[in-house]
Length: 177
Image (tube, rainbow, N blue to C red):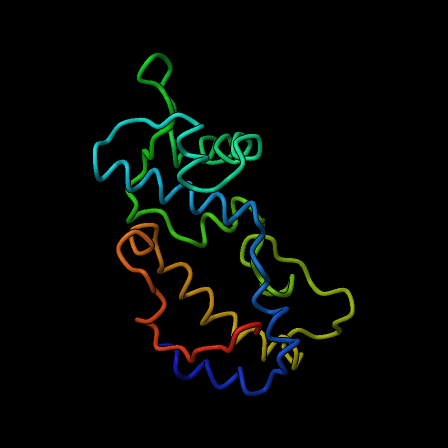
């Protein structure tokens, strides 16, 4: 499915490739690891976890985690219970939580160029014609493969697979790339 779009990688230098695949923020990493903790708990015992437990299991600082959990709750991914057995719990099926959804929720638009964004589209200020823009063409092809991949990856995939990207047969990158 993605082999045709991988050709675009050869057209980009490493610096451009790094900018295309915008690095996710630490906040997003904490959100994903917290969701995985809650998904694992849902599968094991379906009990709510206190913020201290989530922080310990995910490695996220409690103070920072409070804001993340509120964002996830507002988005309808998790719920909270009050009382002695209270805490946070995953209320959405892990198979229904795409990695792209979490990235957008925490970091905002994920397109490398504003003219490629489906949810925050705007024309590039320095572009005269999108249809003939070579930068848009190269990044658009690569972004299409990237977005298909992260929209198809779910929280359930992260739960079950230690290396979920292997199923896409993408080339391995050296450390630091």
